[in-house]
Amino acid sequence: MPKTIKKLAVLTSGGDSPGMNAAIRSVVRTCAYHKIECVGVYRGYEGLIDGDFKEMDARSVKGIINKGGTILKTARSKEFRTKEGRQKAFDSLIKANIDGLVVVGGDGSFTGALIFNQEFGFPVMGIPGTIDNDIVGTSHTLGFDTALNTVVDAIDKIRDTASSHNRLFFIEVMGRDVGHIALNAGIAGGAEEILIPEEDLGLDRLVDSLNRSKKSGKTSSIVIVAEGDKIGKNIFQLKDYIDENMEGYDVRVSVLGHMQRGGSPSCFDRVLASRMGVKAVESMLEGKTNYMVGLISGKMELTPLDNAIKGKSKINLELLRVSDIMST
Image (cartoon, rainbow, N blue to C red; front, side, top):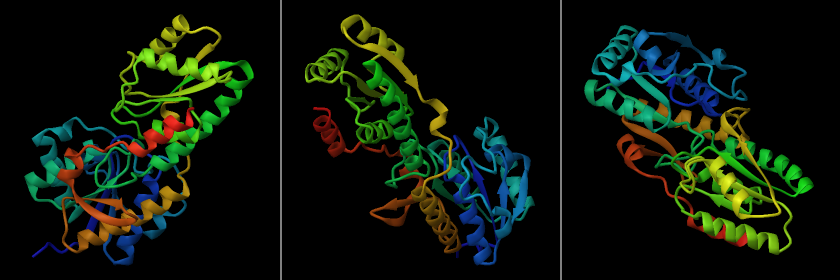
């Protein structure tokens, strides 16, 4: 028989993403709806080790659905990676009479939750919060849609300058291992080329493509580069290469950086976070554990944490083709 859940804890871990606060709000209010206690854990797994807990009720999460970041703070914990650190975290949970844990974060956070469950049999449930959209088991992670809107807005502004000065802009976006942000934002922003880790365009092909664009009458160009793209050592090396091998362009670089993580979550991310929080809590009340909540074909579904961690999200091949056609 599954353990009866009377008190849940929720934490945010790893990099912050827009929608985390909306997820916290949803978890807390779903607990209140089902008349079970809820506590917030400050500073992720570090706070779990230290017992940095705060009782939360429906009123304690008012006014946060529109806020970026996370009111519970987040941190990466070296100590939690040790058996001794996880033992301290387990002791803190038992001392506080907590029966289950909801973790909002990415694959690193889920790996910690999975190991924790395997060692202590403590019920855990994951909500995917990362702007990279690089987790298997959901079409959208929390923050991905908001980050796309932020990037597209930046591209639109940079294009104004590019067209005014006949400039070529390389714009670096987040995406260390996957190119979801670059590909989607590049298409939406009308980029001439999109460089992602999954596709090796090559320097010579990049120059050929830009030359074709120039011959077709384009006086300015935007190239979106995922930070994990392997063509050059970094985006500044790309700039230097183009400077040396193309004439007629004033080449500039813009690295969007952490601005992509911030900002008020989009309507999509607020609704998604609300749905995921409800599904996470109610699944735990049904006795389910070691799962991640995700959006699949428009429905809330559960994916085993192990599958979510080990799987590799795939780039949309249709979008690659659309990108090629649109850059003509």
